[in-house]
Image (tube, rainbow, N blue to C red; front, side, top):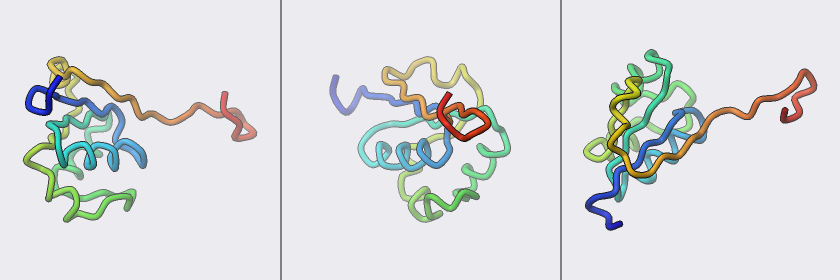
Length: 95
């Protein structure tokens, strides 16, 4: 697999997924997927309410980075990275 045909899906655009997506987008085509449409809407405007990534860092890779909440948009990716929260119990221990 070479750089030109690599298409990466980052599933979950939280404090791990968004920074990962922006880093990969420096060299590869990336689709950032999240089920939260409000999150997608803010990222489309290069705004990260979690303050993990600055607006200029998002906008600098937008040629290679797209955001979506439509699962069909990631079907043609050939690498999938899942970045979802670890489930925890009432004592904040991983479940």
